[in-house]
Length: 168
Image 1 (tube, one colour):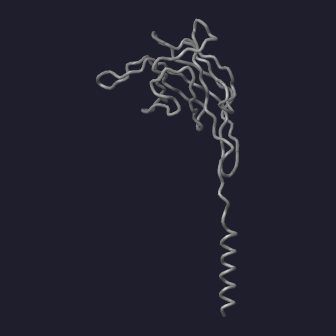
Image 2 (cartoon, helix red, strand yellow):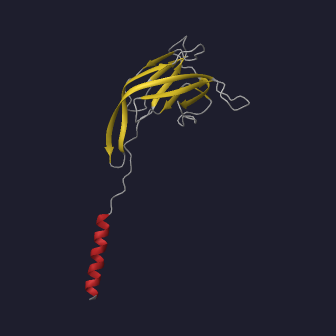
Image 3 (spheres, rainbow, N blue to C red):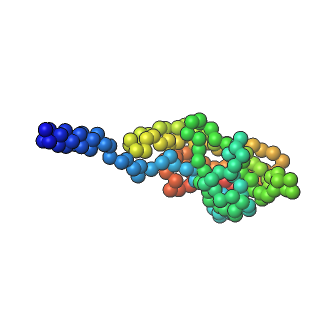
């Protein structure tokens, strides 16, 4: 009887060990961020910092977490939506709050349109989204600080180089 119990315990142990899955770790990557660089409108090859830049997704109440808030930057990375073909941002130059806590910087709304390409990476990573046919535009008003948008690379499959050039 002891041999039978021992046999059952060994069988159950082997069965339990065989049913475990190996831990999957995603090392193949994530959905890429879009890289934007800011340049001088008078000298389009010269990078130019945006003074106290703040970036907020349109319709959002918090800043984009991939951009240092209210910093002087000439290069940023931002996420695009993976569930739609359009993403809009409020780019705020000279961002500051008034005494009531309201934004008083110069706000320009920039919209990016694109086509999404889902790619299955692995069981651990699931799907990522790459983008193609990138196009950008901004709403014009009497006090735009953004003067022009140029698409440098219309396909986004990594964040290794600049996709968009904004002149100001």
